[in-house]
Image (cartoon, rainbow, N blue to C red):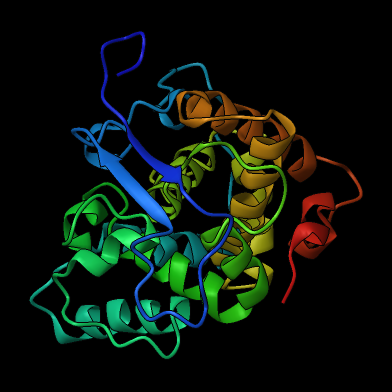
Length: 266
């Protein structure tokens, strides 16, 4: 429990990595779960809180940008529904990408804790980020498998005894990006949001790509700050500040030109 009386979710590292030859990874991590203060249904991350202000500017959009914004908003509005076959298949695909060769015993299974979900039913953790947070994780696993595996298995750097849970952190990153980019507004009300829509108009996968960049940047900040689970909010705030600075650089025309993009490996 932190100094505000909020609970937490943490993963205790018992070994340096996952045993790829072992079909059961339960000896590698120990999950300690509270009441999900990190998650979207009770986010405590300061960087992900909504900033309401009538004085913020509004930016006019081109028809192409308006269309792209509407598409991403449509994605954001989709809640994860465990009764929908396509959502079930997406979750199975995430498992297969994370642990190829290891059979998933069920959509509700203790195995999910190995990925950093709170409990045996990951659908309860999607309430904060919606289906798009699952899509983000799956995009990451598919397009940058090395970086995805490095973060999942905490393979890089001098790690803390109590690490952030991978999947829960991923949901938080989705939520933080939606808020930072002001994607639920009719028009962007910040330079960061307006700039991102230019990227989105050029690349329909820009949000998913930015998610991957952000996840890797967050882990980089985590290591640089020698953080443990109590520092998660501070790490997320530092990540957001760095991301905003990079997006607003004058010479950036594509997300691939962001300095932090170079952190990703395929």
